[in-house]
Length: 177
Length: 177
Ligand SMILES: [Ca+2]
Image 1 (cartoon, rainbow over the protein chains, first blue to last red):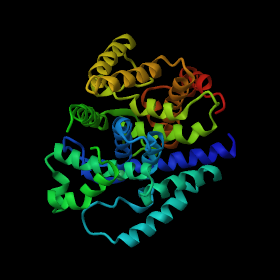
Image 2: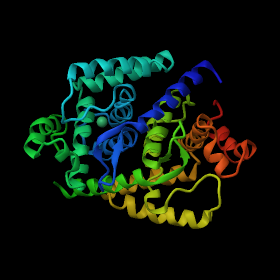
Image 3: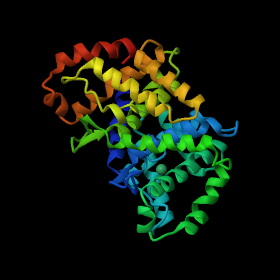
């Protein structure tokens, strides 16, 4: 194996740990909390399905790649729930450090391009990133609706709070939904 | 919501069940068996990382879409282990029926295009499908190596059997690995 393949495999094996990061949302049937690995698959599938009807300035292939990578930093930084108390500045610093370490496992060209894609997602300024972010916010509420609102109730929130925090982001990125 | 979005959401919510299909392979640390939802994310990530070095006739964006969809049929048909006893003809019939039902939840244009992508993956004839299939075979052995070979031992196989069944498919689809 080449050094390049060794580096790629090191990243891919480290990425396996995302399957052990537990989120604040449950499966649709409420049977257990979901992990960030299976969430990343589901949200990429959302992009594949709903992206077909996105505005023409959204490149669905790029959105899918962003979403495959978007939660990787949680391997070091953990999952930040949409609701609930956490220090946003501290969390952002942890995620930056995580991105540096994790994408840094890759060969230099991929370390750079994957990091750029993650930075773009986080900044939520481009049409692709706005679409990706809005799907990431759109999916959990749907699962919570299907499972009776489990994790909303636990975070002590309600629909108007959801609307205020999440709804506008969805509207901004995916106004056709 | 339009009928189109209702159909898309019905598919996406049904797809959630893939997170409950348990595979014959463990996480890299051997702590538990993995499910087909998180596996689908991981294998799509393999395509994103390793696809950068694939031959030019492989379109990585299509491979990723194939891999996001490739195991959906397991929601109805269950997981068919690479090793171990099962009736391949019966399994193929179950998977065909599953594909008809599950992709049939989508709006007609997407039902048709997703089914075509899954059929292409299953047939393993095009460069994209051969690459996707070879990654799907390449990933579990790597995880098993990391976790001490757990599921190979349970299926009572060994490396030479792996080489014979899996190695050639990997070589056929991904000779540069
Ligand atoms: Ca997410």
